[in-house]
Amino acid sequence: MPAPLLAVENLVHTYPDGTEAVRGVSFDVNPGEIVTIIGLSGAGKSTVLRCINGLVRPMGGTVHFRGRRVKYDQDSLRHLRRSIGMVFQHFNLIDSLSVLMNVLMGRLSYQPGWLQPLYRFPRRDREMAAAALDKVGLLKEWHKRAGELSGGQQQRVGVARALAQEPELLLADEPVSSLDPLTADVVLGHFVRVVRREKLAALMNLHTVELARKYSDRVIGVRDGLVVWEGPPEGLSVHILKGVYGEEYDG
Amino acid sequence: MAEPTLTERISLPPRPLKRGERVWAFAKWLVLLVFVAYLALAFNKTEFNPLMLFTSGDNVREILREIFHPDWSVFSQLVVLMNETVQIALVGTLLAIIISFPLAFLAAKNLMLGTPQGRVVYTLTRFIFNVLRAFEPLLLAVLFVMLVGMGPFPGVLALGLHSVGMLGKLFSEAIEGIDDGPVEAILACGGNRFQVIWYGILPQVAPSFLAFSIYRWDINIRMSIILGIVGAGGIGHMLMQYLKLLRYQKFSTAFLIILVVVTVLDYASAWLRTRLGQK
Image 1 (cartoon, chains in turn purple, brown):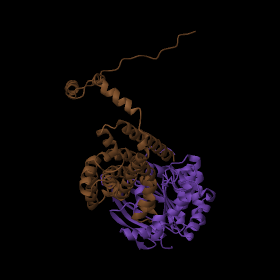
Image 2: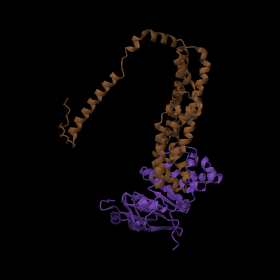
Image 3: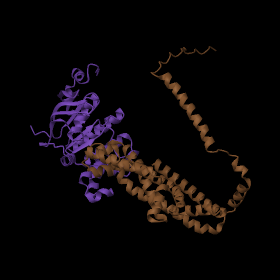
């Protein structure tokens, strides 16, 4: 067994309003593996993802990335986030900037200080951004404003931004929930192919069982802030899914 | 042809009365009554009498006759002064933009309320904006004319300071209205605090910052005419002089120049702002 790329142990987070979003979650992600977390809205899926790159600071438990324990001070986090790309439900692009500039955001942590106020990036970074755009098939659109693109294209820009970081792990928080079902399948299929080709690992939250079955190596079922099931996608029986989503689940 | 079937009709059940609703209804009428009475007194107190415009007939006719015959001999001199007025507004506004831009970030709730220190800075900056807004430019101009003497510079200072308060408030509210998504994305990419502001927030607020600035310049041009009256440079000073010395023909020239310039710049500003809004 190789050492896991990501090891989450007994993660706990409670929001200031008292919501116990995560109540002791543990799991691993191995190099090159695609893991999906499923569960109802509010089960704590998003919080788990955000605890891994420190967008949310966990209140208990540990996260190990590449065998190193994650520290939550600003400097350590910035360093950690270089190696972990993230894709968001609402894409989180800057609509008024060009597609290329949005992808270059993935290179921000390498941008020399004197270039920062100028919206300029070294040639190497621009070429890396172009390569990332090529991987998602949007190289031709590099000069368009991000807001002009369709939803599916916008999320591919979001993926390119994460790829431009040259990460080892991609976090995807409901990456296709704001797309129509057909586009969702296409975009997610594309995402998974890129992850496989680049030999990256990915941890996703998905809200449809169908997509989780189709695209993951392993599935983690979360309910009320706890892991209630973990196994290969073939193991997702109606019985198991009722355990994750409640008795109302009807396949 | 058959009668179309009507949907069933029922009357609405009575609306439950809220607690104290009757008292409130009565109080509202009482307040309205008091206000109307006060308004009536106000007309009386202000000696409101449109007839006065006509009863002092000779005077009005004389003034109107002169006003409709502007004296163009002072035209070029006044154009120079009008130009100064526009420039006072331009420099004052620019000064205000430069000062209020960084301050606005310190007065934005969403950026500052996270830490106790941030809270202190936020409250302090907001307080400064409020104080600066409370001082009318005209009062500030009187003050600065006393401090640095007559001329355009006190006008610049007066407009600049007051506009810092206005722009600071508008800018910081624009920052408070941003979408957090891009900020989150830039944090997740490992961006530092400066990059969050420069790449995550600035592109979102830039159009409204520009629109507010142009609008402020527009207001300041009109304001700077008034400031001339207390000796803070520009065409306002001459306008007041002509009026005091009963030079209505020259006054008329100044008035026309102001009218044309203000109207043109007003349209230009509105056009520019709609262009920004469309982008």
